[in-house]
Amino acid sequence: SQTKTAYVCAECGEDSRQWLGQCPACKSWDTMKAIALAPTSGGGAGKASAGGGAGARARQTMPRMRLREELGKEIERVLGGGVVPGGMILVGGDPGVGKSTILLQLAGLLGARGEEREGEEDGANESIAAGGVLYASGEESVEQVAGRAERMGIDPNGIYLYSATRLENILEAVSTLKPAALVVDSIQTVFLEDATGSPGSVSQVRECATALLHAAKTTGMPVFIIGHVTKSGDIAGPRVLEHIVDVVLYLEGDADRAVRILRGHKNRYGSTDEVGVFQMSDGGMKPVASPSALFLGERILSPDVSAAPTVTVQGSRPFMLEVQALTNERADAGEGGGMSAPPIRTAVGLRFERMQLLLAVLAKFVLGRRLQKHDVFINIVGGMKLEDPSTDVAVALAIASSFVEKPLPPDMCFFGEVGLGGELRPVMQAERRIAEAATMGFKRVLLPEAGSSPEMGKKTGIELVRCNTLADALEAAL
Image 1 (cartoon, rainbow, N blue to C red):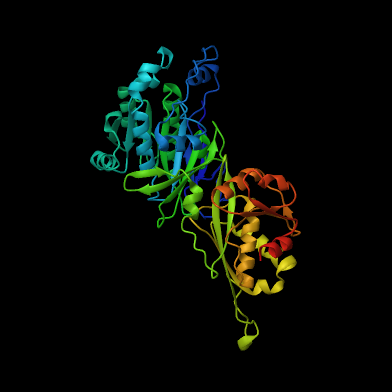
Image 2: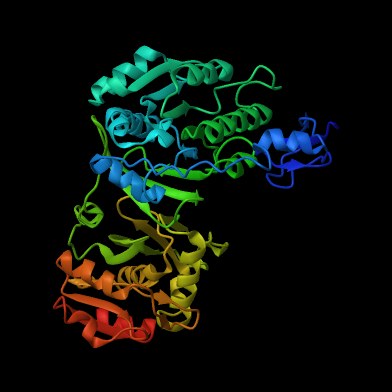
């Protein structure tokens, strides 16, 4: 056996085979710390014992653990259909966004399945049917977690609450109770005595995650772990943590809004395109049946508001959102004899690079260079983040509406991608977007002519305004 040494950044978790004065990832100085890796054996016996042996028989495939109630169905949508036995799921998010709340509710759903599974499962899947979920909290006492569960109306019969920070104690409880699932809140608060460093350090997070992964794969028990995020929005700890787990979910939301978005960033068992929409309430997370109605529910129809409704598709579900824009001309650069400050550009819910691209296209082909002297502010109402380029037309027309000080038609919806030449490019699932707009009461839809046909709107009785360029769209809308 041979002991190897790796150098890991204490700030961001970037690892290297040699010591570096500056971390290449986060650019921090003198943060690379030496970590001794576990000795590796070159013999075949070691590999056989770790993997179960080359001649070991494959275990019978275990079915996914289905979740009941509307909350369970919304979580299943993001997971790709049920909880996979032996899977390891990492849930990250900002402090106070509701990570512990949603996993406590999920523990209640899985714990309530105990008796049902015992009647349905056969002997091969007896390990799943053992019943009960172990919720191990390193941040709160048992009384605190129990009080929160009671307030949210969660059935306590199927949940074992355990407060511990020493991972050996948690794994011992798993061996004794044989739960159907394990929740660890959080990976940054637990520690292994054999590992170096304090709880939350790079080495501790790596070793604890590896031990939990081994427990999940050998027992067939799904493991959910909560991970804190850094200021940049990444999971705190080594980057290898996201490689170890099977699923990485992020719970997004603003502190001043009740809307929460559960989004998949990695999923070995399904797609990462699906999102779950919830509302935070006194009773915990409540799934939102109609996200479009939620995001457009506070829409204000006023000539002073430059807003463009649009339709984005997240996985298999279309959402309607409202894009608001505000432009304000700055003072002339020549006034006062000095240089004027550069215009302000702010985008909330939209990638800044995308806004800059659309402003360049508008300035060159539609509105002229005078736009470059304006402050521009973009806001996606409802706290949703737009990653879909099909919303380009809505963003561009909202900016143009504020620039020319003319409101957009209140009964018109917009979608389409904008190219660098000012052309409108087709988008996928146009018919589903049109149907969603019709459901929300819109009478007209502006969309790219390419990839569409007049017959698309006949089924829903909606008028289609088909345009080739952004200039055509501006003329049709304003």
